[in-house]
Length: 447
Image (tube, rainbow, N blue to C red):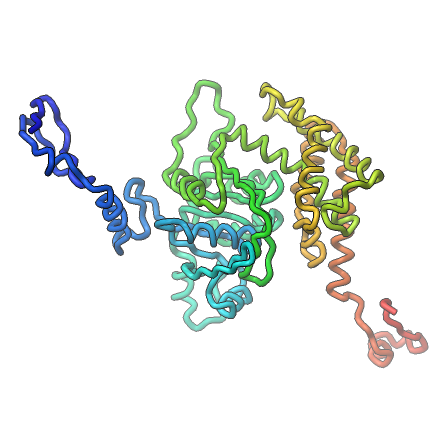
């Protein structure tokens, strides 16, 4: 038998629950009051998934619903991974068009992930349209269904060029208590979002940034192949980045903590949380790699590995990396940090580029895939970011600017070929439109 002094004032722990507080001495049984089964905790946790608490975290009272904006390669991987963890959040896919909704129905209301030759389909998702279906007879009802509820946890995986447009449609559903995780290629996206959508620092949502090295490509609209296993790095951004030293930053919101915990406890993502400064350096390393492999693969129309063992291309790489290294090492955000000069030296960055190109030698870069589909690329947020920061520092990055314009030109050419913008016009039709061209022989430019 155990006796507690009367000065103790706390609840008894029995089966993982607080029974009641005591203020006086009480004799307890070792077998009954001090013993508990670990499975009781598991049962208590499962009890929290009843209807009244299924969408809320009991400790933080944050809605346990994660919205994913963007159903591309990474978006499908994130959605599939989050739905497979114990006690998963409710996942809602935000679709941007009726055609996407039709494809979702055609493919069985499921996201399929193929890994090591095995396909796994998961169907535990909700779907919303970010634009109301105005042609529907039940417009008012659907307007409320699709646009009234607030979004607390949002993961953005759209292309960088589409971020502002995609967020505009759900801007009214985001508040100061919301958290947006940008899991995209390129840099400068958050600055653009703040400039065009959330100007007020006091009312804008909380931000997280993430980068991933997982290799994913799509077979169908909602079917992805996990071709290369990698890691994910995430970190919270401060709401007030320019506070004086010694002054504490604002407290992180509950939604930020919940979303960060959810991502880092997902085994498939292999996610690790970093400080804002460490994450910035990881972003810059990936930016330097993407600024070489992505644009050159578009210009030469080749796989990543084809850029290796080519003396002429290696000289172009080194010229680009010289400018990139110069700009990164001069960034004010990195001023005073140790090992910046060696970490972002031209030689080390070149080693990183060669390593990634070798490891992904059979892959097509995401930028080349977009260009071949006639889609706008992320070049403005990769090499364009280097050019922009160079201009702020008074340095003209001629090589990166040239590559930026070459990729845009190549993408425009491919887009015109896909659209077949030169139609075959019959002579009779042309004469009706332009009578003066009666004697002109019309030929297709494609002949």
